[in-house]
Length: 496
Ligand code: NAP
Image 1 (cartoon, helix red, strand yellow):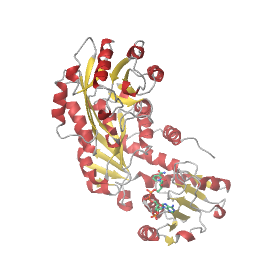
Image 2 (cartoon, helix red, strand yellow):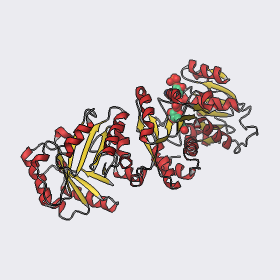
Image 3 (tube, helix red, strand yellow):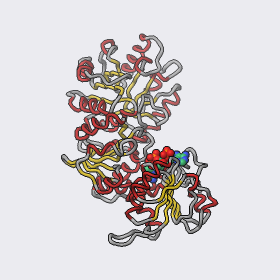
Image 4 (cartoon, protein in one colour):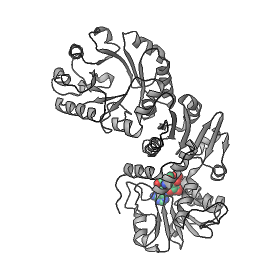
């Protein structure tokens, strides 16, 4: 179950949001009285409440907004209990001052905005001893291992406990609560109005993470990156799990570079079966793998990891996705043993980073004639030496080509008015592939279309690599149309 926190300065907005949430299916709501800027009228808020309610009056020192006297705060909590509210939230230092009364259940809460203390179990036992119906422990995650400690504390507890970590490193602990026995977890009314750092919205919890379906047996997948907040992979993988009826959840794991090893060690205890891997871990993850597919060896980068018993298997779906997209644009899928339509094509690759490596590897194996240009020439030269091809100066990049592949971020949101290739050099016979997927229709692609070129979008590559990951994760084909529709909705409207 999800408890949605509402913090509004006016009673009428709080009441309206409460009613709206219940229409959306919410079963439990927390009213944060500390957000109300006028004199609080508890009876008005509780009289016709449409669902079970938690009353909380958080002080500034505990991350709230209440600045009045402690006597006034205790009075509000007692009044809520006298009005028969379903739950009150009491911090540990005031729990002894507010006696149990009627049917109101007591959530005894502990907040730590600095860290997740080593003595979590002691803290838990102390809260439990304060006549708790539910213990709530919210601590700051400074590293992903903190999430695991809080989740396991909750799982091993002998009284109903909600454990969660704050901050974006803590997001997995909010999503995985039901897997580790949380009676409910907290979400916010709107994603732009989080009441605690790292809190997700009710809409994200229900519609992206399918939180109401998560249970102790749900398999865990995710993306490991730093930063991870911008990743759209959770949206498309969770949508695909839902459509396929698979009991699994896909979680964004923000893992700083220096603690990747600890995170990999924690994988079995978190129930993780597979991961998408992205910046900055694509190369560093290699040292934890027991087996890799040939493409990983060739490219030197991993974007997918599977955990199967003792085996940790590494794959790269980026290269296959990029080649499938290009071959499709050139006339369709290539069957094993057939010659690729890319053979002998003159391909200009722009950029020399991670995506270029995958593209260069694929083009080399398909017999294309590659020219590469990048802002930092040494990086382009290195890729030309490694995969074959000619390296030219960035300033000299407008050479004749059958295919152009942009592997730089030029044209990516918010710099949507930039293009890495001058439109006067575009020819109608060209295929232009922009790996940038946000926006889908970059300036380069718009200009290519208006010059009569065939185009391949970064969205197609992104969907293809995700579908290949999904196949590795589950052994099942993903619904690509659903993934595409979900991704396009997440990116926003296409402007041609
Ligand atoms: P990366 O490793 O950081 O490499 C970026 C390359 O672009 C570098 O060679 C860099 O040159 C060059 N570059 C950056 N800014 C530039 C500028 N203003 N002008 C000219 N060159 C510039 O990044 P990556 O992982 O390869 O990703 C590149 C792009 O691919 C991303 O921005 C993303 O849009 C796209 N992408 C798409 C997918 C997909 O599935 N569709 C997946 C991943 C990435 P220097 O060496 O001089 O810095």
